[in-house]
Image 1 (cartoon, one colour):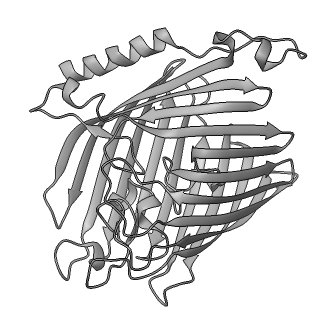
Image 2: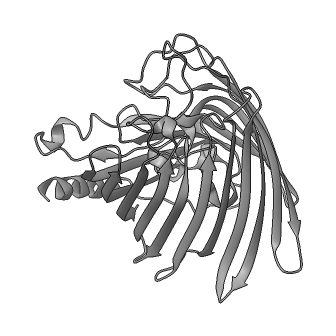
Length: 378
């Protein structure tokens, strides 16, 4: 409890020193004429989590964790921002979670675990956005699907997006981000991608249809970049056996009012064209409600089946299946807005791991994971 109080105090101090500042400006005012404080916009959040993991092929895990994220955007000139962000967690490309240790003082690892996950420039012009540097990915995900992309992935490179009432076009050339303390790769890994989303307004709903291609260059024959294959197939030397040239397709319907709540339903598929087998995955999901105002709630259900080499496991959902590929099962995610900046949430995963991911030969173990969260945004 003492450690949790210390972490809340640290975030509260940061919030008082740099809460969100919304500039009030006449239309003709340019960024260079604003004061420094009016050009800096801070944000952040702290999540406290209790988590249990139970699986048939290994010891069960019960732990208390936190995630701290701090970020700022600085207006350099009109439409050009410098973006910087840090989050907690050690050497994990898809998670800022950090476990509270019983045998270490909080000060010994709290600030040490912070690392940069955003460091770059963003320029907007009309419906176009250009980003250079280390940035969160820009691809569209139906109902925030994590079939291909976990929520927390960052990339190093150049990215562009065009977004209007009828379409979203996103392209980029990036280098896979190696987190601090991650394994050294034998060769650089590059990612080239393009995604198109067509938006249609129907009489009763909004329809989004999309497709994308994500072309990794340099994975086959390379070492695992983050200490684990996350379900992807390795050869006899522990190197990636395949490349990952992933084709994605999806459809999403958004209804404004179903039983008095917004409602979304979506289906996504992913197919890796490089290997001959174990290369397909899909995700079916719906979400009712949206935790936007105080006392609002939302609940999302999804069923996912992801073969070993359908996607690049290190960047797929880090919670479902224990992270990565080679499993199938159900996920239920719920969130409730309890206050202006306070959220309560719960995530429940009921999975079956493929034999290739089991720690016991010949077993397809059950995998159950429960996460109970308290989130404070500032």
